Image: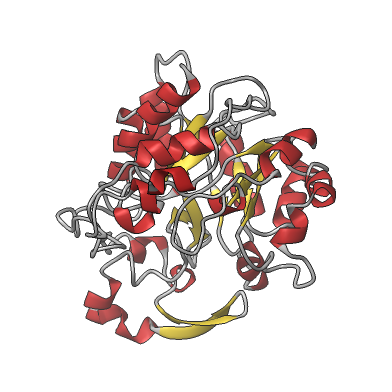
Length: 346
């Protein structure tokens, strides 16, 4: 009965360019390995992901490294290193007080002494904690060079600039080192297998002024860009807002419930017009984030009451494919890749 509480079945809408939707491995295969590690990215590629996604922050010496946040106590063993105890601090990041250890207070050599750990230990295995380093963006691109040798269709990279306004304010802007390293590795032009994404606006516009690489404006379900207090993601998702985004970006990465809302009890509702409106503005749509644990799934797709147990991720993905999305972010390419291939008929 609950399965019937969602949207009525519809004929799948086309993607913007008529190509099959892409699977973006969110922080790598982060449902099976600690996120943002070379092991996580390699597994995602082995499982068939089209793109791997590194979130990029900077070190004290200006090196781009992959971490979900510049505060690293949730994803590394930094708290277990007495030599770094004095580095613990409280900072204001995007208007919020955050306490912990921050990448910008460490050199790359110091960060390399840390080891990654599972960010969601109540939902996922901790068997791989302590095994992997924090990778630099260059090391991730080196992995892609190795993997893509002899491939007809290369696996792409989908970096996110994390807190770019904050980093610029402390003299560590993302744009120059990001564009320099992408150029060094041969990522040039609008057809390069890369998307650069951000929740902020100014850094995307700054990149567009210097590069024609594909850009994605991220959107959350609430609030607005940290670099523009007057703006809201809701307004940016309107037809007028999407036209404005199309002046500097090639697509949007919305929180998935902006496309199919959930009811108070967690069932999928009727799709909004966001995908259709974005396509009308010439923008691709890559929603986030699709995860297999019951904790994250719609009510009808849960596999029981244990939040860590795996439910029917393919069913949720299929509902979104029908809206015409051009790709999706998933922690679980093991399930997402076959679901997208089946759902898109490819």
